[in-house]
Image 1 (spheres, rainbow, N blue to C red):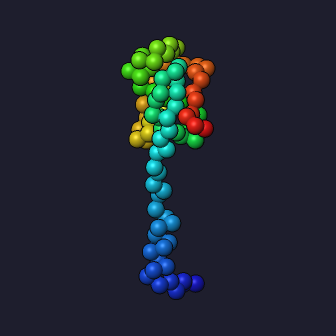
Image 2 (cartoon, rainbow, N blue to C red; image 1 turned 30 degrees about the horizontal axis):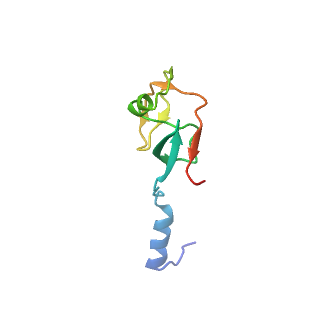
Image 3 (cartoon, rainbow, N blue to C red; image 1 turned 135 degrees about the vertical axis):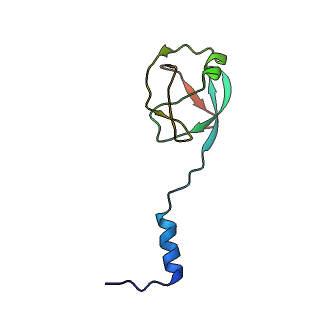
Length: 93
């Protein structure tokens, strides 16, 4: 059975088939008393920071060989280490 769709209806279907576009949610957080602008990822199973930021915050990490971390740009990244039990506060939450 063929569908009788107008050109506008076909375009609507194309819109639904496009991959979703994501806009990162940026929030101010506080880590060890330092205000940091962070990207909030509600689907992430961990929080990540660059090595220079971790050093600047005085974080101590355990070495890790994990290679399954996917960065914001969608590319896999190796990690330097893991920091456990760091309290993170979201401003005005």
